[in-house]
Amino acid sequence: MRNTLFCVIASAIPVLTYSPQATAGIIAPGFDVQVYAPVTDPVNLTFDSAGNLFVGRDNVGSGGGNSDDVRIHRVGPGGFPVAEYGDSGIFDPDAVVFDALGTIAGTPGSVLVGGGTGSNSMARITAILPDETTSILFTAPPMFFSDINQMVFDGTGRLLIRDDFNIYAMTGPSLSTRTTLLSFDTVRPTGFAVGENDDIFVGLTDGTIQSYSPDGTLINSSVASGLTRPAPLFANGTLFDDGLYALDNGSFFKVGTSGATEIATGIDPRSFANFGTDGALYISEFSNDHVLRMSPVPEPLSLILIGTGLIILFAHARRHRRLVN
Image (cartoon, rainbow, N blue to C red; front, side):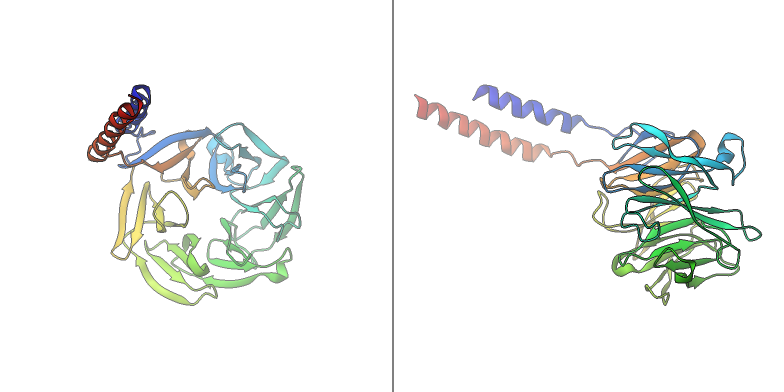
């Protein structure tokens, strides 16, 4: 019994002495921030169901151009291995999303890669199939997309696409399935997230976050305000409290009914973020060629509870000795 008691006490020690280690100058009280993997020029992030991370790329970080044909990266579960993904370079591979059902790619388990060079050029979506074969799905003139900056599947299987001015929905591989959900003019979208009931939360260049129903009807014109260029994220079933978050100008915020509360600072302002299959937050640290992993620090066991547990153990040990003797 004495050996059992020692093991219990020893196993509690790491919990009592645990302290998070921040990295890259990030200040995030109550959270552990670690380098997950080294990735060249990382931008948008997406995960498959097995925990593989696919990372979009902007070659300007390596001295090239924003729309250069380069390959994206795949990072294995746990941060290793890191390798280029796809059999060839892809035009402006900023936006990435995992097409589990093959709704757009036509092949389940494909990665969709979107990009473009602005309102005077063409936008494109390319599929990387599971065998890493690349296939251009379409190249669209500016009347369809000014650029493709972000792609997210909603709960109904629609692919939502953000360009410089609009948010669209597509239900199949053909451009004929594209419909316009939201249009903006002088105030432009800087990011969006899909929340409960497939409501859409949109960050805008005026520093606000607005919410819309799945059909594009405005729900709330000021879910949050006073930000800079917010990129909303919705946590549901993650390690974080459920609800709305936002990455904005080097900080990470929890958005509630009373506004946005800052929970982390010192993040690269050019970062993108997404929640992983393990529930942690992953951040592309463009300036340092890293992907970071951020998770809440487990609350330490209180001394009162541990003390109570030890009393119970000692009482059980004494009873055990009486029964043996």
